[in-house]
Image (cartoon, rainbow, N blue to C red):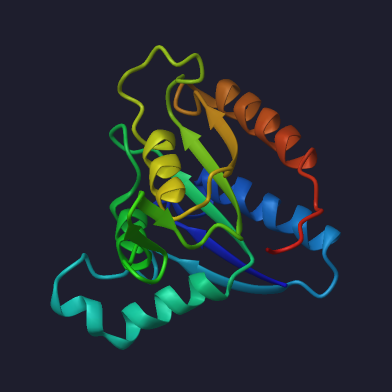
Length: 190
C-alpha cells in the first residue's frame, strides 16, 4: 500500500498543518506494516502554475502518476486569506485531468479516483466550524475538488483559532491531535 504525503504551508517548522499531517502519517504507519511513503513539500518543491504548455511536461506527468499510484493521500493545508495556498491549488491543477481523474459522460461529471483514502490536516487562524462564516473557502474548496474526482468522503482533521494567541494555538493543536488519535487505520483500496 502506498501513501502520498503533501504539505503546503509556508510556515515551515512552526506550521500547525505540518504538525498534524505528520501525526496522521505516523498514525497510519502504525496501522499499516510495510506502508510505502512518498513525500512532497509543495513550498520547497513548488509546481508551476497551470499553463497550456505545462500539461505536457515530465513534471506534470510525474505529479499525476504519483497521485494515481497512491492508495492513501495525506494533505497538510493551511487556510490563507480564506482559501488554500496557491502551491496546493497548483498541485490540484496538475491532478484534475480529464480522462485521468474525471470524465464527462451522459450523466455529467464522473470521478475516476474514488478508490483512494484522503485525509486532510487543515489549520485555520480563525473559527469557522459553526458554519456561520461565509468566508471559509479552504475546506469547502478541498471537498469540492476531491468530490469532483470521485473522493466523496475525505477525512478532515481541523485545528482552528490558531492565530488567537499561544494558548488557543496549543489548545487547537491538542484537540486536533485527539482527532488524529481516533483515526482508524483500516483501509482496503478499491
